Image 1: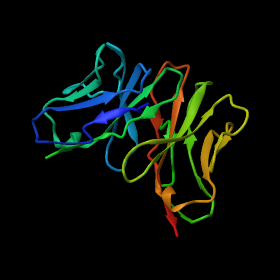
Image 2: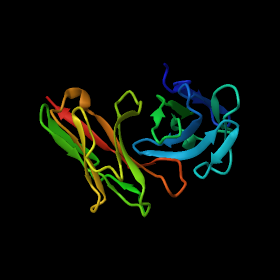
Image 3: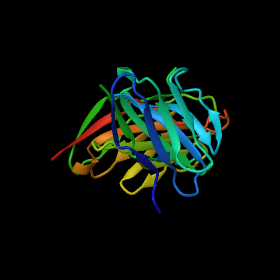
Length: 112
Length: 116
């Protein structure tokens, strides 16, 4: 009965490279949320997805960031052409729709 | 306006004492939920306790209780009998159920240090 699985746990990218962050929700959960946590700050909502659909992307930067949750496989948060300011912890949460959220352990992205 | 305000950047408490972490919220939605999460130095987000806006009683979970004062729009977390392992960042969060937003709004957190 695994919880929300995020990988990798740590990711280092050079400026200009692409970062791909993966999230497998809890079994039975069909709602996935991505949050970003900058150093010494709280979590900020980025995007909410259900299988094959983006429901709310109001927190996503307009450029370079995209997310998907395919019919099969994990949800992916993709950051193209990373910059130093993208360095942060990225958390995925899943829910079964009843309002409770389970968070993964996060992916710590460092852009060098 | 901030939806969640945590005014205490850092708090210290003596081991075995109780501590209250403050949280105020701002919403016009009549139906909402309030959450507290713990983030230890290892970085994961651990759910602690939940309070619904229509719940008549304050939520409790073991050593955690939520002092919910709806008229004041506050949802303070009380940790009783503090332990060294309670040292962590604590985040208050809110979800609004009727606005259609599905995400949580987080405060900036309070860093709790338990002193032996």
